[in-house]
Amino acid sequence: MGRHRDVAGRGVAARVRVGGTGRGCRAQRGCPAGAGSRALAPLGSSVEDGGMTRILIVGAGLAGLSAARELTQAGVECVVLEARSRVGGRVMGGSVAGQAVEFGGTWIGERHERMYALAAELGLPTFRTYNDDGQLLVDLAGRQSRMKPTKGAVPKLSPFALADLGQGLLRFARMAKGVDPERPWQHAHAATLDGQTFETWIRRNLRTPSGRAYFRIATEAVFAADPSDLSLLHALFYTASNADLETLLAVDHGAQQDRVVGGTIRIAESLAEGLDIRLDSPVRGIQQSPNGIRAVCRDGATHDADRVIVAIPPTLAGRIDYDPILPSWRDQLTQKLPAGAVAKTFAAYPTPFWREAGLNGQAASDRGPVKVTFDVSPPNGEVGILLGFVEGGDARRWVRLTQAERRRTVLDCFVRYFGPEAANPIDYAEQDWSAEEFSRGCYGAHFAPGVWTAYGEALRPPIGRIHWAGAEYATRWNGYMEGAVRSGTDAAREVLASLSAGAPTGT
Ligand SMILES: Cc1cc2nc3c(=O)[nH]c(=O)nc-3n(C[C@H](O)[C@H](O)[C@H](O)COP(=O)(O)OP(=O)(O)OC[C@H]3O[C@@H](n4cnc5c(N)ncnc54)[C@H](O)[C@@H]3O)c2cc1C
Image 1 (cartoon, protein in one colour):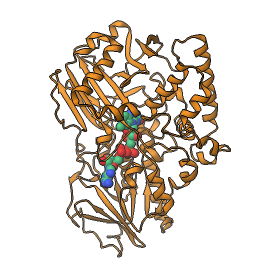
Image 2 (cartoon, helix red, strand yellow; image 1 turned 180 degrees about the vertical axis):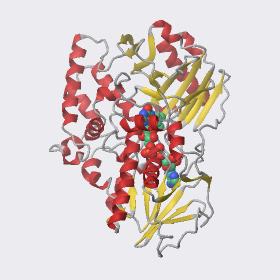
Image 3 (cartoon, rainbow, N blue to C red; image 1 turned 135 degrees about the vertical axis):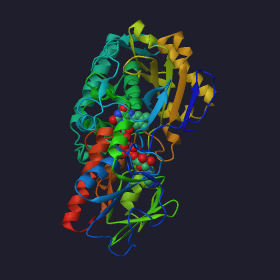
Image 4 (cartoon, helix red, strand yellow; image 1 turned 120 degrees about the horizontal axis):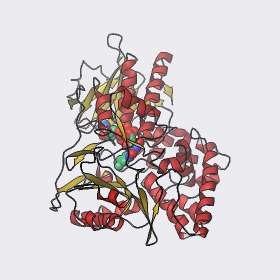
């Protein structure tokens, strides 16, 4: 399905071409065998060419681009092989009612230091997510109430439900603080925490339907997965890596605080400027010898290098054909890291009419398919745009509907939250990330029970000349754009260190 939109409610589904190849980047489409920017050495001979070492990077998402930038700045030649016809990966630009929106990664927030620094360095201004001047709509168990837009606010509930939720949040926060995001598998009770799903913990530790609903909605919003999909240890690791649950959920002083004018795709495109990026170059195989690396693209083109950074989601890294095959523990790990399921839906209106009613466009509900919404209108408020997330089990079911049914069920939710005016948008668009060949789901990978404890150690270490990068590898801000940038930079530094040491690392 990928991307669909219909204009002015006419019910017409059509493919939309969005994003770009990176303004000013030296991006080329495909590349015939041996026809790179210079002649490539055959595998088995030295890849040194005039004293210059070449590093390959697979994937031009934020991790791959950050790695390439770091290496280039250190004077190391690198070539980025990107499967899509554009850079950015899970960051993707789009437009709704003629306004720039993000079809993928959107917000930067509290303590996303590298992302704010990049935006400033690249000359890209940010603006606040519409939040403070209205209240959040809570729709739980068929009853609606309003909630303050401040970090840490909780819904209006009965005293019993409130106490239940309060103790659940406190207990979860205490447990998360005890997990080391660098080595979650070393927690004193790792086996117990990793031996149960997050859903099991929710059932055991929350007594009221509202308390349980809060945790379930939060899980879907943060992981694009159901609490039964992931282990308790993973929920704790992810939270510890990203500050705390309140930060992850909040706009005010939280992960959804700011947007980039023109969209986050501008960060990816600006990062790509000046880099050697080969678009439309899906890597199918990676061969490794004592002398170097050879990447083989789907069209048969080959690229040789000293080392490679594989900067793609783990489930896709597992689909590459390695020669020799990867050690069993690393291969098994990638077999066990599925991506979440998420679709983004957008409806545009002549004005952000919900603001007049004292609402900030954010809704949280236990009834889907859209359970979480945001106001993603442009900063000038020229038109009103609602963003609705369809996540986890809802997404798995919803994507099987016809386009007309999908649109209707989304707009029904918007009407339930914001009134009858929401029924007639001037533009509508949707983006299903599970249908993207080079993502296969989003926001990122999650660890099911038993995976952190059995395979956690295998996640980050390089295998010989093959290094790993991506949001899933980050120890801080795991799963976020901030984590992707950090991981890319870390992988580049790891490569630089191993180049100075002069020998392959890992096994
Ligand atoms: C709907 C959605 C909303 C999100 N919201 C936010 C948010 O608000 N804030 C936030 O911080 N994060 C958000 N994220 C997460 C964030 O976008 C990602 O964590 C981050 O962009 C991942 O970057 P990456 O470089 O690790 O991976 P990717 O962006 O996935 O990059 C990998 C690249 O590798 C390419 N590739 C794949 N296979 C191959 C192959 N075989 N050969 C060559 N190239 C290949 C892909 O095309 C892609 O370009 C969101 C993600 C989605 C999808």
